[in-house]
Length: 248
Ligand SMILES: [Fe+2]
Ligand SMILES: [Fe+2]
Image (tube, rainbow, N blue to C red; front, top):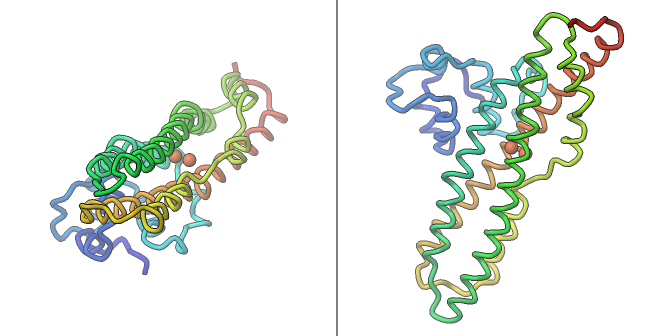
C-alpha cells in the first residue's frame, strides 16, 4: 500500500504505528486533527515528495523510490538521517540497555546477564562508531558538496573537497548495522534459559525487532538515496572541473 498526499496523517499512523518516530523526525507533531499529508507538510514546511518517499519506503521496503531519488536534496536526506542517529543513540539504545539491566534469572543470573550485557555493549560501540564517522565525515561532506555545486563556478574549496574525499570509499565500507541484532535475538530465543521476569524479555525482544527494522530502513536510505545522489554530483563536478577554469 502506498500513502498519498491526500491521506490523513492520523490514518497513516493508525495503519502503521511504527511510523510514529519516522513522522516525528520531520518535526510534524501529534495533534494531527484531520489534516492530510499535504496540509501538514505545508504547515511544517516539509517537502511532500520527500516525506512520502521516506514514509512509504519505511512502510513497504519494496516501494523504494529508485527513480525519484535524484530529485531529493542531500540536505533534507542528511537532516532526516541525522535525526535518526540521535533517536537510536539517545533513546532506543539506552532504552534497550535499561531493559537488559532489569533481566533476572533464578539460576546463573550473573553469567547470563554478563553474556547479554557484554554482547550489547559491543554492539552499541559499533553503532556509535558507525554513526560518529557519518556525522563527522560523510554527512558534512555531502551537505557541503551539494552547497558548492549550486554556487556558480568551481571554487578551489570544491576541488579540495573532491580531491580529498570520495563517496565510493564510504559506499565500499558501509556496513549493515542491523545484522548483529539477529544474533542477539537468537541468544535470547534459543540459548538463554527462561528469565524470571518474562515480560521484560518480551519487551526487550520487541524493542530489538523495532530497532532492527529502523536500522535496515536507515541503511537503505543511505545506500539508495544518499550514495547514488552523491556519486552523480561527484561525477558531474569532476567533468566540470576538467573542462572549466577555476573561479577564485
Ligand atoms: Fe547512518
Ligand atoms: Fe550508515
